[in-house]
Each structure stands twice: as C-alpha cells, then as structure tokens.
Length: 547
Image 1 (cartoon, rainbow, N blue to C red):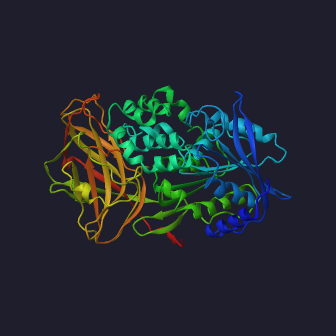
Image 2 (cartoon, rainbow, N blue to C red):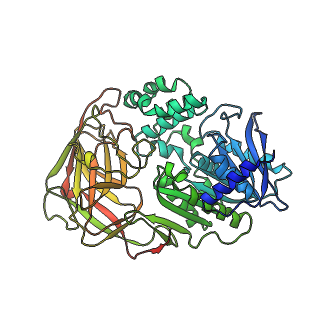
Image 3 (cartoon, one colour):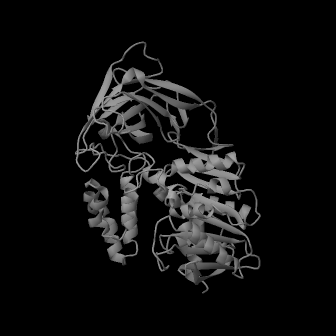
C-alpha cells in the first residue's frame, strides 16, 4: 500500500525535527508473514522504497509492536532513504503466532527470518540489522552465526548476556525486570486499559517488590501472564546451563561486519555496551562507539535525533557505499562539564590515583600511618536502604541528588576536601573494601558522587555485590568492587564522595539476611585503614567537539 500525502508530510516534518536530510523516495508498506521452522508465522511490515536502485535491507525485530515510534523512526524514515525495511514482531507478540519466551527464542527465529529474506525478489543480498534494548538482543542472538549477507549492525543499549543483566551482581535486578515483565503483560491491552496500567504501575507493583518469596509475591500482579519471571528468579546460579539461550556472547567473537554501538552513562546495559566495543575493537572489527549522558529510556527520547542521524550515516556508509560516517571511532559525552569529545579508542590513557579511607569519614590521597579505627552501619531489610538514581529502569533513574540518602544511618560516606583543580575520571574506579558482617547473608553497595560547593551530591557510578554466605559471620573479608566505567569531570571546588551501604532497593532485591523468606538485620564493620579507592584519572585532556 502506497503512503498517503499526510504520511509524506509527517515524514518530512520528522526528518527536519531529527536533523536529517529530507526524504528522497516514495515507499509502500505491506504486511507480511514469515514462516519459522516449526510452522509458526511471524507478522511484520515490509517498507519498500520506490527506487530504481534500493540501498539494501534493514532487519528490525521487536516485541514492542510495530506502531509509533518504531515505525516512524526506523521503518518510514529508512524506507524514504531508499532502504527496504522488515519490521517484524517477535514470536507471541502483536499478531505473530506462537508463545513469547523472552530472549530464548530469538536466535533460531532470526536465522529463519533471514532465510525468508533471501527468497524475496526485492532482497539484493545486502543486509543490516538495527535496534535498541531488546531489539539489540535480537541482533546479538542472530549474530552468533552471522549471515554472510550482513554488511552492518546498529545496536544501541542492547545486551548480549541477559543472565548478567539479571543476576550479575549476585542479587536479582528486581525493579527493572519485574517492571519490564509487567509492561509486557499489559502492552497489548486496549487503549484506556494500557494507559491505566502504566499510570498505576508504581502503586500496583509496590506489594510485589516488597514481598517474599519474590516469584510468589509477583503473581497477584502478573497473574500467570509472565511465566518467565518466576523462571528468572528461580535460577540464581550463573553456571546453570538453563541460562545458555540467554547468552549471546559468542556473537562478539563471530561478527566481522561493521558495528555501531550507542550507549548511555546511566543505561542499565552500559557495562555490556563497553564490553562489546572492547571485544570487537581488540579483534580488529570496524566498530564505532557513542556514549551520551542518558538513561536507558532517554536514548529513545532525548537522544532520538542523534541516534537517528548516526544510524542513518552508518547504514549509508556500510550498506549503500556512502561517505565515512564519523570523524573519530569513539564519541563520548563527559558528564560534569556537559561536553562531547572525539577519541581514537576507549578508554583513553589514564593514571591510577589512590584515595584512602580515613578516620572522620575522610577520603585522602595520603595513606594512613597507623590504625584508623572502624566505621559501622546496620542494614535492616524491614527498612531497606533505598535506591536513588543510577543505571535502572525504575522511577528513580539517572543522576539524582543523593543528600537524603546520605543522611540515613545505614549509609557511610567518605569525602575528599574541595578539589583545588578539575579532575577527569575516565574508566572504572575500583574499591578495595575490608569488611566484616555479623550475618553471613549480606550485600554491599558502593557509589561515587560529585558534591558541588552547595553540598548537592550527584551520583556518578556505583556497584552492588552480594557477599558469599559461606564466609563465617565476623570474619574479615577483602572485597573488590569494580564500579561501572564513567567519563566525568570533577570541577575545581567540588568533592569526590564514596558511599557504602548494604543495598539499593528496589533496584536490587534486598538481602533478607536469613537465606530464606524471613528477615534479619545485618551489621557491617568497615576497617578504615585497610580500605582504599583507586580512580583512573585522565593523563591528557581529550579533544572537545561541538554538540
């Protein structure tokens, strides 16, 4: 079906809004059904450009439906640039047959979809994949055995190892994946019902977040419509072969086509995006990386224009043979100064600067010359330390003021004096913490904050860790917490602050302190002089670029 004049006008307006060149081609949209090897048929939309020389085919596979904004930002605008686009609903969603099993089904279904593409008269043998988040996962699942036709991939905020996202800290990533499961349950409800479910999600999910055991506590909300949630909760062991279909890391060693990666410093999949870049770069794959100041959701909202422009330029270069897409392989936003920088690779050179925990809740580069005592706090799962901001999908996400959190008695803070000059943190800080707990069932949450001259404390990076319950209560442990990488400027007059607590709820499931459904508080004792924080500091200022 040919597009209407209204759609053409809308495409032109959207192109201008996103800072793209105007549409060049008319296109048609046709529903298609693609057969899988087990007879299930997946529903999709084929956007076909009316062009003498189409530029190749872009495959986008999604569980979130084929309406706005995906159809506009990807299907329509790319078709108007001369690309065939197959926008396909994954199994069990939005008209596609079969049962939705998140992540586990995408490798085979992706391969079967490419096999179907090969038989289409409009497919010319040039293929690219594109998409964010789950749509990124569908790409990595496919690229474990890359199709020979693949010319490029565009992955933004997309994981390749779902088990690490769910249980990588040792604690279940509760808020994100209960909330996501609830979203999936309601996403095909009728208009008003869906709006109401979104508006009431916080209130509806509160009892499930606070209940134990986690799986049964969620049932009154999920009502059997998300059976995968109980499966995830019930498989905490990272070595369990049950997780094999949820791991697509093999793609990082198999793909050879050029890959564009886009991430956010406050995205829950940041660590995986940077791992993807590191592995592909080390193998000599043509890989580019853009990281902005965004949360997961902001990549599709605040960053929509940048993402659309960079994606189109990457496809134009590698699928259609156009000009080079970018000046530098790496483009990253330095938080704290709010500026973009072009780099030849990530991370740039840095030197380790060691900050020592000191008595009086101080953080200094001067090492103690003797005992400095201990610092203590008590974590109570009946009043769990709340999560404030950070790399999460929950309501409190991104960079937030942490002052109220730091005022709690279950949070330790260690701060530097005001910095005499600006300091650029670039990479992953490492906390070596000597601690003992009076209950073997315990967690530790560490966070770095930037404290401005007014005392406002804003989170930069953090890490959560579940302790080994086999270590006897009271035995001193030497923990190493590698915080998430960051690219942040601490301005002169600001202070660097380290938080230490026993959890971040509901971002991570609270540790009940019992190994079961009961609750028991845990005392944490930090040996101050035996603990230190190593911060990678830039050796030379990177180039600043407009934007």
